[in-house]
Image (cartoon, rainbow, N blue to C red; front, side, top):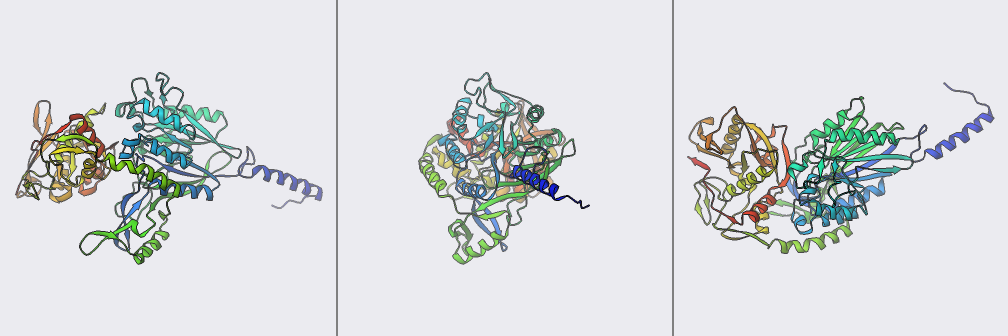
Length: 589
């Protein structure tokens, strides 16, 4: 309804509105606050992956290899976002450490150089930040805190002199007159799966979150972000049960969110953002950025004067190559080669139309920095870490003929050694009772010859960056997984540790599995269909790839974050000598 004003009152009203408008620019204090629009870019679980990786994308029905991610491309995108958006945050949800030769060589300092270059606002500690112990983490934090905050609220390090007073529970960021609290939380299980030492304690993250949210609320902060390394399921629980949290920027579970129709290799687990309601029926947004700089999450959020989410949008963006040499396709001889200019232009046109794909030239300063760090990596690959006392050739299936070793009746000789390494690592984790390992033949790519074993050979053998995953299965489900993988064969063929089996491929249906046994302290015993076993495998088949759909159906998977190549390297360094493996797979035709 229109109201009539005298000219005097109109003049007064105009002046009052002008004052309120001036105060309200950007965002104001209580009462007349405008919506605060905030853009959040985020990474998690980068694990020392500074360089671009390779991924298949679908272009007009053809599969094309392209480079994706890498810190030079991510740096360029972060700079672009800072220039194009008003209020901006760049966050990292933990696990900078471990996962590549860059970490082995530079112990996280190379990653830190890029995070500083990108002007990171805050990161929370992941479990892998504690893998080498408090001394290395202390060094990292000492250098990092000059530029950004390192957060973890559910930790006590007062008894550890190297870390005492260095880890903040939260940080407060100001945007005009509005304040945003960012709380750091890490997995409660860190003491069991990493090496923080006896003087560092971890507490329940949800109870801690409630306490810190109350503290921030009492400081009149009504916009709260949890920067989390808890894993997606725990982050959903936190979002639903802790009132006052608006956004959870997560990690640890390497969850792929969003929609990637043009990327056949990718199977998204949920929408981006994932939206839940808390106990007060308020919206809470949950996001993750997958892993290894393959995607950069970009979330746009609007908050009203009460700090409630009033609008949101965004998606993860996968930064592809931007030059013809960054793309490869198979030629008539089934060999991969660089594409021509015409094909590149066609690909570029498709990428421009896809909101989750983007070509962006690498930042020049970041590229120079990467070149500086990459040179010594070539020398590192020559480092000898152990000895193989026998030739350990690799074929995918039993009965196949190796070029040098001839027919291998029991299949690969290096695959069982790698499965032994995975079981050794899984058994070393506290509060875990892993009994067996199943892994696919395609996870391995070459032989290990008799003689010195080098770092370069390990990464040639295990090049994919897959990680160790633990979960429980019934005996009947294990039998089903083996049956499916044996029938599928080739790269899916299963090699084991703590488990052995014989198969007669002349048998019908599941009857061809004539024997399956589990290794126990008392010796080998038959697999029990109704008994639950804890198994370990690599993240590739844990996600259902290579036909391991039984694994994919397990919702409560434990992603350790330990890279298979690094586990094997640690195994070689520890035991010094690789030996000829015992037979665990017998297949007759």
